[in-house]
Amino acid sequence: MKDFYSQFDFQSNLLLDTLNEEEKKLVQNAMESLTIKKGSLLFYEEGVPTGIFQIKKGKAKKFKRGFSGAEQIFYIYTPGDILGYHALFGEERYQDSCELLEDAEVNFIAKDIFFQLLKDIPRLQQIFMKNIGHEFGVLANIIALLAQKNQNARLAMNLLILQDRFSKRYKEPIGIDLTREDLANLIGTSPESLGRSLKQFKDAGIIKVDKRLIYIKRKDLIFELLNIPDSEGL
Amino acid sequence: MKDFYSQFDFQSNLLLDTLNEEEKKLVQNAMESLTIKKGSLLFYEEGVPTGIFQIKKGKAKKFKRGFSGAEQIFYIYTPGDILGYHALFGEERYQDSCELLEDAEVNFIAKDIFFQLLKDIPRLQQIFMKNIGHEFGVLANIIALLAQKNQNARLAMNLLILQDRFSKRYKEPIGIDLTREDLANLIGTSPESLGRSLKQFKDAGIIKVDKRLIYIKRKDLIFELLNIPDSEGL
DNA sequence: CTATAATAATAACAAATGTTATTATTATAG
DNA sequence: CTATAATAATAACATTTGTTATTATTATAG
Image 1 (tube, each protein chain N blue to C red):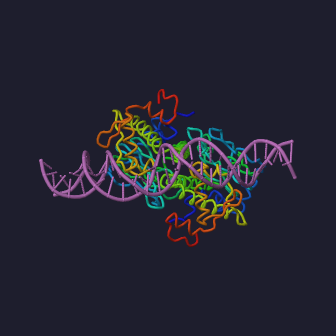
Image 2 (cartoon, protein in one colour; image 1 turned 60 degrees about the vertical axis):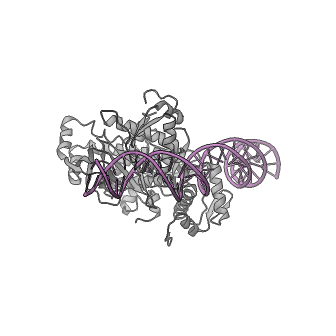
C-alpha cells in the first residue's frame, strides 16, 4: 500500500521537487509575489482562470457550494502547495473556490507565462498531469470516507490528516486551528454535532483543546478508533 | 447555472462529438471490439494502464475500496461512455477499479495507439484534459452530496441522476436496475437501511418497484424533497 | 422444472446525528 | 481596556441511521 497519508494528500507541494536547479530558477523567475488578506478568494467557481498559485505563508480552504448553497470544504492547503492548474490545462472555468484562512503570501504565475514555462520545461506537463491523476484518487478516497464512516471516525481521520499536513509544512509543532464551522464543513456535519464529538474525544483523552486549537494527545487511540492495526511510524 | 444533471455526469460519452468525420474514422480504426462477461474488471486500482475503453453495450461501476475494504461506488457508466484515460496522461497507475455489471461489448484502444491518435489529432488532448477538469468538479459535487444530505435526499438525488443517465443512453424507458448492495454502496448506506428509504418512497408514491427495477413515478415529489424549486424540463 | 443459493424486504431495538435553545468564551473595533 | 459581535460549548429532545435477526422472493445451476 502507498503511504497512508498520501491517500488523502494532494502532495502538490512536491510538484517541482524533481526539477534541476536551472529549471527551478526558470520557475522562480516566472513567479510574482502577492500579499493577500484573510478571507480573500484566490479564485472562485465558474471564474475564468488567470494563472497558478503557490502558497508561501498561510492556509487556504478549497470548497464548492452544494445546491442548497452550503459550503463543502474538501481540502485545506498549507505553505508550499501549488494550486489552480486544473482549469488551465483544459481551458475551462474553475470548478471550485479557494479562500485564504489567514493573511497570506502567495506566489503567482500568470497563465501565459505558465504556458511558456511548459514549453521551456517539457516534462513539466506530465508532472502536473500525474498529480491531477493522484488528486482524482484523493477525492475518491474522501468520498469513501464520507460515505462509509460515522462522524467520530471522519473527525478522527481528518485530525490525523491535518496534523500530518501541518507538521510537515511547519517547523514547530502546531495545533489544528480551524473555526468549528470550517471543521464541520470539512467532515460533513453541523458545528453543534461536531462539538459533541470533540467533547467525547476530550473526555477520552484523545485530544486537548486550547481556545480553538486542537492538539492530538493519543494518536494510538485514534488508530484504534479507526481500526487501523499497525500505527508504527504513521 | 450549468445544466442540473451535468453537475453529476462525467459526460464522457460526448468526448468525440466535436471531431469531424475524418477524425472520427481515425478513432474508429484505432478501436478493437471486445466481448466481456458480467463481473469482469476493465481495470483495477494500482494496476498498470493498458489503454482506454468505450462501452458499447452494458453498464459498469467505478469504485474504490475504503481502508476497511468496503467498496465505494462513485460512478455508473452507461453505453457510449469513454473511460480509463486519466492514468494514461500521467503515466501513473489506475486510482480506481471498474467492473462490468452486465455482459458487455467494449471498444478498446491500446495505449500506444492512443498516443499515436493524440499526435494525429492534436486537439484531442485538450478535449480529454477539459473533461478531466469537469470530472473533478463532479467528484466535488458528489462529496458535497454525501456530506450535506441525509439518506433519503441522497437516494432521491441518485435516482434522478441514474434515471437521467439511463434515459439518455437507451431508446426505450428503462428502470433503474442495480442490486440493492450496489445502490447502497453508491449512496453511502447499508442495504437494510436503503430498503427502509425505498419503502418510504414506495408508500409516498414517488417510485414503483418491480423485482429489483426502480421506476420514478413522481419526479415532482423528488424535487420537493430536495428543495429544488423549478423542476420544469429537468 | 426444481432445488439451492443469492438477493431483497421487513421489523425491532440501539446508537448516532440533527435541531433548537441557552450560556460561555474569545476576537475585534473603537 | 472595554464594549460588542462573533464564535464556541453544552444540553435536551426529535429524528435518522445502524444493526441484528427473520422471512420472502428471485436468480441460477443442474
